Length: 356
Image 1 (cartoon, helix red, strand yellow):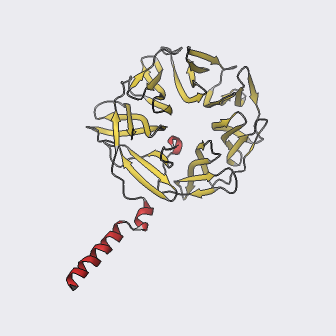
Image 2 (cartoon, helix red, strand yellow):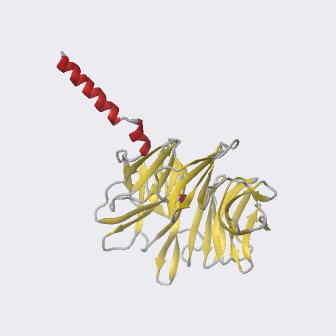
Image 3 (spheres, rainbow, N blue to C red):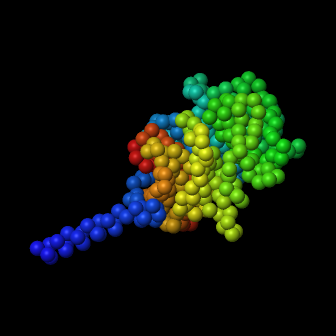
């Protein structure tokens, strides 16, 4: 009887060790991989992925550019819920240039297009493609965002920083607070609620547009830090991802704000991960691609409150670098889009899906 009791106690101790909260909180153990590979028509390598956005399980768009003999060519792919296909029907598809951020504005798709150095917005509706030219040519097109009733393009020309605003009928130039040197990114929830992260004479700052003026949002960013991305959600929640530099090393941080009260800052075990590809997944957690410790598999992080776990994509034969660049929540599934480099060739396109 004593022997049986000893075995029972040993089993209880072993089970407690397996589910130890300390072990779960560290995020060191990877969850079983459940990602699957999706075929993507190849492009002219090496390719670069710019963005991925999904409206639901049956529509997603991925952008970037490929290499041609005389320079870059824009690259556009569409997911229809079953397969990826390449779209070459948009204006300027065969001309030099590249495609940037994808935005859904009502029933339309809006995409920033650098067309042989000239900036424009591609718009796709039920009637097909059309374009909205920018009012001037910029030296640098840094970022773009669009919502119902408004769009912004930020960059630089010979006179410095430019914030171009489109209200649906005309373009105007907007001013920013004194000391702002450069806008590194911009995003918007509505025409009267846009956010941007800026390089200023005093370091990185977050700005907010209230429908009338750009102001300092007074976000208490960590010291010696920068911002990679700002994730705005319909609920009013805001998540900022970036890096803080300490003793010469970068450490990823995440800041959240519920739309009221104080900001909360966390340092999940992500190393120096670049958070630009971060999205809110269909499970309510934050997901982002991270640098993989396996050359033949991609790696993803899932951050849910204090808990961080990791999962791997499918194994790819002879791959020496699998790099998902962007994620999108597509219904109950999660899509990724990026590049894979197979030994002896240059990087080409890859896509993976979790769920669905």
